[in-house]
Length: 244
Ligand SMILES: [Zn+2]
Image (cartoon, rainbow, N blue to C red; front, side, top):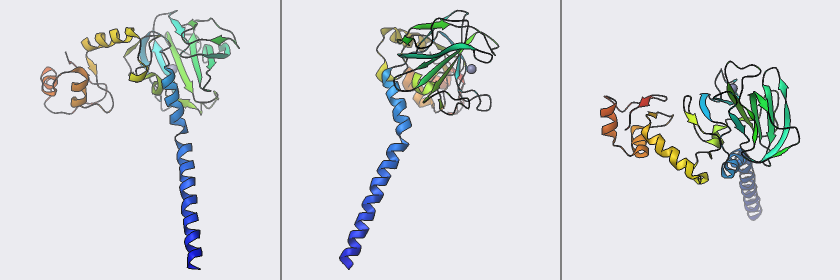
């Protein structure tokens, strides 16, 4: 009898382990999908300045805004197929691209659309020109990323910067440049940008410390504090620091 109970207990423990594995696997499915996209190396869709990030406007802003000059080329961030290309009162001229991973990207407020529904596009294909059609106050690209199909409630929306790399409001991005994750960097043009970056003031990001900035910019914490007249180690996001 005791042997029987032992076996039942072992069987239960094993079942628990298997179900935990299964649940764990399901849980990380979303982040794995993001990692795969990162490996695919998306490129920024246009030249411009980040004028708004994801999740602002009380969480209603389900994309990022890149402000730039009228008719700046707008590029497909990765290979895919155009699933919609039309005019809407809110998005204005808008293009939807479905990627092999089932991610959908949305390019809104275009001045001009260059592609038609069903058309296959390669990464970097110019799908249109930047504009301010629809509900837009200035010339910018409103760019959205959805992990599955686009829905009216935008249930599957994801912060595009999870794939493209972090860029804060006011930062300049370059269309056609690979996302800023180290493992997808190949273009020599990026190295040039990094060097240009070195001369610019540093905009503090969430999670930065004086120490992490000192490592990134190859400057001592003491020197950063001197240059910026800081009396403590306290810094806050979006604070601009002189680090040169
Ligand atoms: Zn927007």
